Image (cartoon, rainbow, N blue to C red):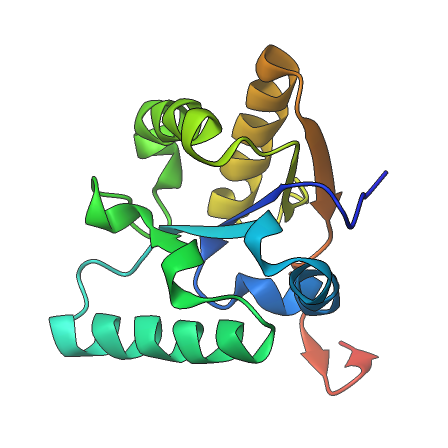
Length: 157
């Protein structure tokens, strides 16, 4: 069960995945902004640098609206390569990063998106978080965030 007062790591496959849990991020940061850290994994590394930096700037701006300071946001591509649609190739590095982050941030719970069978990066990260949480006795909390069905507005096709 989600604890708004606990130190919380939000780890997401991509920039903009926070849309699925924005109200929860805001609630945690409003309660205690020092209790939340955001980590983004995969980026479109084949895209040009100016586009990648623009996406990061937009994510920092949107997270600031949710009460998260830019110093509490990490992009794993600052440390090692995590390519969009190939997050599974970086699973060992992500796991190691989380191991180091325990000492730095001392988080109690981890929020991420569900394994839904819709996006390979979301699914790989959900599996990784599940394994990590069991090994380090952290509380994993999974949220739905992907709909692979084609829709026209609100009407499924």
